[in-house]
Image 1 (tube, rainbow, N blue to C red):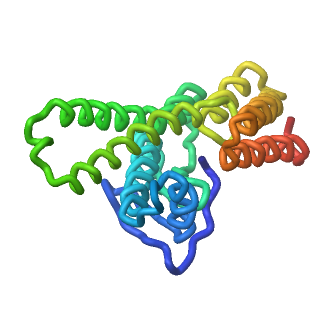
Image 2: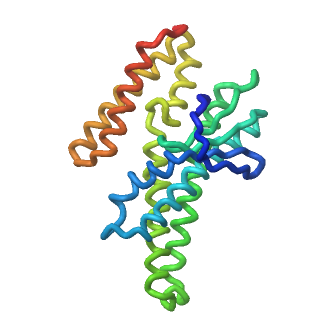
Length: 233
């Protein structure tokens, strides 16, 4: 959450709610890579809707972190890049373990709220008379949009809460372990992350979900490598 992200001259940059946002071209490339298997009959219009869902969901998630960081006196920036999103800020001296956990959980919580909005909207339009009068293509687009918003913000939010660094769940477990085990808590968080990531990767292999298996395989490697870096443990 605190490491900077390399930017490019082609980044999309804007400020929303007073917080700077940087969107690298690699973010869109990752969105296409993730979304193409989700698009039925290789429809480019659905791919465009998927990219919109991807962008909105990741941005809302990072704003959850950023708003909480601002609340605790930090100045955040948001980066959307090839690995998703990152809310970058410098913790103050008053940044306690409880505040660290709150900031880490705020991202998934924002996503879960967006999931709730999408779910209620889906239920509402399913029982509304005006929906039946929409053009078939409009209903197709709206249904695809809400379906993907529900999937992304529920499934990805739950995955992100697994105790695997550098996911938000890993940050939460790291903060708690460092509080109760001051000298080796970070090391224990990396060990826990490697074990959980390896197990999840194996699970996805059995389900033939290659991307998720590769992702958690890389996260397992990341945690193992973190154990080998020089540290103050």
